[in-house]
Length: 181
Image (cartoon, rainbow, N blue to C red; front, top):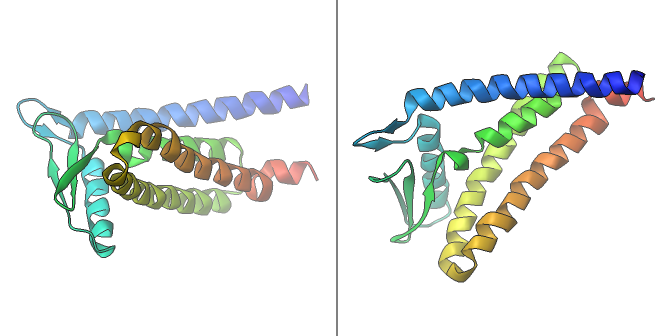
């Protein structure tokens, strides 16, 4: 019975946190994206595109970004070629929400939850920026493998990182680890 209670508590905390964070994010997107005659992405999507641009330039690539005129995306132009479009799903916010919901559901001390949540979210965001740049470079070099690159390889990287962070959280910082000793 105690084991079932722990599972139920985990599920309630996870889904409550997830739906609250997802709801807030959805409201944010509804308020900040414009889908009328002129398309304007949310500020977070614009910030991701700016970070992709800056890091690409720091790595020595010629890069530019521009709001797509026909859809909610930002064009990423690398070495003079329009290679990818950055959409809301490229912001990593959905993955960060999933990550935060999990660590909150597997409670740890408040301090550990806050610092691990912040550092894990930043790490996911940074890896995501590097992922977008790598996708762009690989698209230019191997255009015939775009589907494999985008749909298999790079989700495995970002979700793999999130999974490693979750395992680290459970094994090292969560209260679950302390109750099983």
